[in-house]
Image (cartoon, rainbow, N blue to C red; front, side):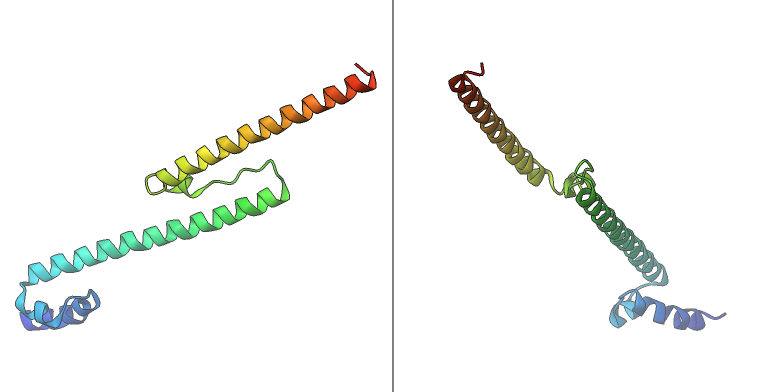
Length: 125
């Protein structure tokens, strides 16, 4: 196979790898090969990330349905899948949950005190 034939075979594949026509004709075969390999590696990483995202979405949907069917089931949050990207949101969520828990505890204590008072006034205690 001649060099011209090799370049002719490489040309459509290079265009598919988003190498411009001008760059194709100005670069060496090795540079074109390097750019094509880089493009394919990036594409593979992107595909893998899309698959991971789709899997995480499907898994989270299943967990939400499981939670709907049984309150004891847990549901993971985005930071469980992507801890680095959602660190701040996790912190805010935990602070909010802590505040809710404190409020529930206050309400429970008030209800308990009210019930004790009612029993005491009714002469049950």
